[in-house]
Amino acid sequence: MLFYGIGELWRKKLQFKNVTDNQKLAIISGMTLGGLMTIYQGQSLSMPVKLTAYEVQIIELVIISFTLGLIAGLLHVRLRFREMVI
Image (cartoon, rainbow, N blue to C red; front, side, top):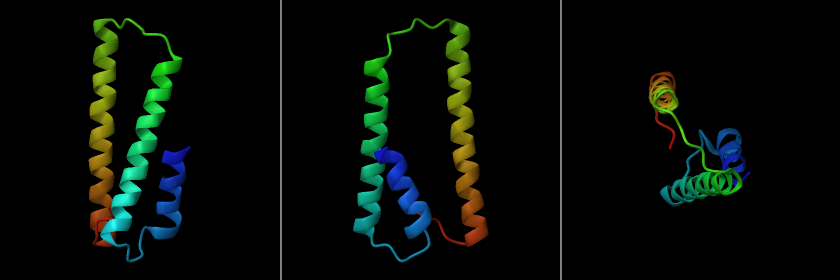
């Protein structure tokens, strides 16, 4: 909830305003903390799963696809608005 709450605050209120470096650091720190808490909670609730080699390949493909999508999104924002947000 922390991760998504801070992300929505950034998206709706602060994205194109003059935000100081300290505020950007606070936003990044809050989102990182929220993301880590989400991962920790998910790991503590689920039982360990033994993955096959095929499932590991699918997870690797998802991670690569997510990374490429993130890079494409950042490039799109950079080219469209002529500035990089955070």
